[in-house]
Structures are given as structure tokens and as C-alpha cells.
Image (cartoon, rainbow, N blue to C red; front, side, top):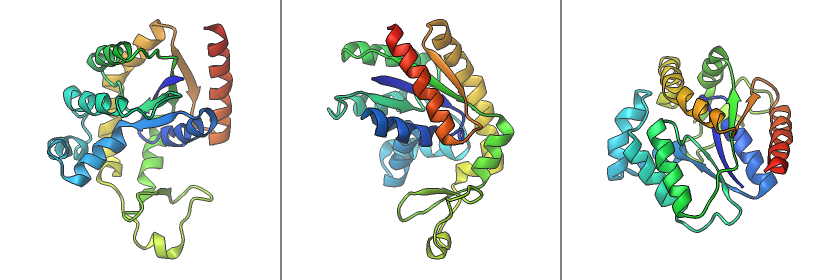
Length: 216
């Protein structure tokens, strides 16, 4: 199974990706995580993309495509993958199509998690990350509070600050709406409302995926 996961930052993509991995045995490919890892490692690519990420702008297509292509060739995707954060522009769509064709893979569906912008800003403003483990917590989400020891070392990522989140949302809508329209025209887009309990969102995804796979 090969899936694309689309949603604004803070829409719950990470949560749903984990459930997809656990349920279908596929691999989660997050371009955001790969880019942040490159920045943290201080690689040549990391230095190039840091300025874009810190200001809430999309990283140029060439850099992201290079990361994705390398990831698809690692040989650990026997059951497929769910990729989020790519493709996010029409140029990336063409690059992704070429990658998939060259590797004999077929895209099964594109999942869009739709959440209102106000909800996204609120969610992202409440997020904190543990610099030692990389685990992300939402301080206003029931059941997601760390121990006092861990909470004392939590920090807010630069790209989770409200002013940066708003910029990221503007960029997201401007650049990815055409992408979603493209996949909608192909009949591959599945849209689910994300401002619900994660279990309800995932149940909807499973139902819609099952219906689509039967129809192929």
C-alpha cells in the first residue's frame, strides 16, 4: 500500500500516520522529520534548509525531492509507505510520479486531514518537544502530560510559535491546494474531517480506504 498524507501542520498527520503504520505494516516517511534531522546534524543540506524552516517557508523542491528519492531506495518498504509533507507543489507531483514509475510502485490513495486554521494555531501553540528524546507533547491535550522532570526540559520549536504557524498555514494553502485539486481530479483524494478524536478520524480513514481498495 502506498499512501500520501496531506494536512496542515498540527492537523494530526503524525498521529494518523502512526496508526496506519501499526495497522497496515507500512513505513512512515516524514519529510519534515528528515529535514529537521538534516538541520540538527548540521549537514550541508541542513544548513541550506534551516533558513526556510525557521521562517515557515517551504524548502525548495530540489532539496526535498533529493531526500525523498534517497529514502525510497533504502530497501525497507516491502509493504509500502505513507508519506507526509511530499509532494507539496505541482512540480513535486511530477517528480514523485517519475520516482514511483521508475521503482514499479503505484499510488493507492491520497489522504487529506482537514482542520480549521484556528484549531491548528491553538494546537501548535500548545506543543512542546523533549530535546533529549524528540517526543512531542501537547500540554492542553488530556493524557499527554509528561512527568514534572520531563516537563521542566520541554522546549517550543521555532516553527511552532503562533506567528510562524500562521505563515506556515498561508504557505500551505497557497501551495498545496493545487496539489489536492490535482489528486481530486485523478479520483485518488480521500478527505476526512480532523477536528475529532483521533480514533474517530482513523476509523473514517480505514472505512474509506477499504472502499477504495475494493474498487480498484
